Length: 532
Image 1 (cartoon, rainbow, N blue to C red):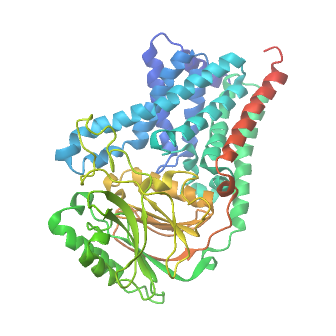
Image 2: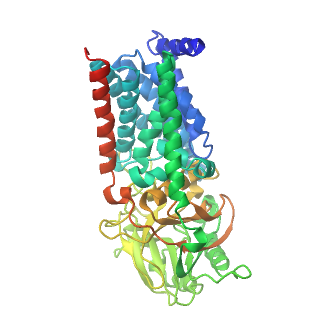
């Protein structure tokens, strides 16, 4: 205990050390350490030293120093967590390769402003209210969660690598299913509880029997209780093979086409043929034939709605009475506006339904500050992609109604279904080939898994290079194709649950949790520090 206390003192002194770079480097390393708990590593214990060290580093810091520590922490977190952004710029190294370091560091530096302001705000509140160790941890967790929420909404939002996704790995989903709690409080609410759990050992800077009891209660009993509640939810769930839509058999096609080859003119017909060949394969012995075929985002380099020949060829593999669901670019009536769309195509080549992507990727699908910055967007095309009118629930023959999510639209908690028109399942088509075999596709997959639990809806995911999968409403994977493999996945469509608590009330629950956390701080301050 004495050794732990001495170590805490060393870290605390670094936070106020006149040699500012010491605190900056420690914060940077703590931020990077946090990423080890995220996909694809899922080393959850890394969060304890990461958050405990951060609390100790801020212990005696001024608000100004805390802002610097927060920015350095965020820089480490986002460089380590989103380094894979650079992979996209290396797809066409001649045109965009020079932007790689600017993109990775620039994005991280911008996103690091959220912990910058968050850490400064935490320390300001600590000082103003003269809080003890427990109060500081609760305030830090609340501010961290608020910053995550703001990051998911400000300037179109980027809710990537929320701390709650640390629970989305296969191992934790099995042995400690805390992720199931997202059905009640959402990913942001689960982030709040996760930070409290992992940061609470910081009270051991002043070891005592009471401190050890508190750590045991909140860092052991609380997660075990959450896991028990999640396990109970899973226990009540029917077996996957007993929870599927009658008469629906999906075939997901993962062609595994390298992004550098996708739009090469002479290969365009070959890419279409690859999808057709995979789609028309016979099912495994004893398995029913597919009723519906699913291709990923922009599966083939043709605007199918505007290209009769390609659409007619695609329609040849549509099962009788079924449809092909595929991502594709779509041109508007003037042929100048471009949409990133999902089409449902019938056996006669007719388009049965269309969804146009709403949440576009800055610098990828449209160019902010066009004409000011000295480069064009990452994806070359005729101008910027146009956003669709809004979320929609699509209805086609032979399938329960579904909502379509294109690419990282699946990363946004509480924003994946049409308001007032709840679908029975979610289709997520994506092209993660931009990011190779990096951590990016694994992080994207974890986000989709969290959405299935939050909404109580199956997520059917088709990715060009992976990870393609069928995820049921409890986050269980009923089938998948791993990253970097070509092939098909034939699977049943899981039935939906009734709306979860989070699906009904959304982030109102987060507001209630934050209010309860802050109320607890004031109650503790009044009774434990009445003179403050």
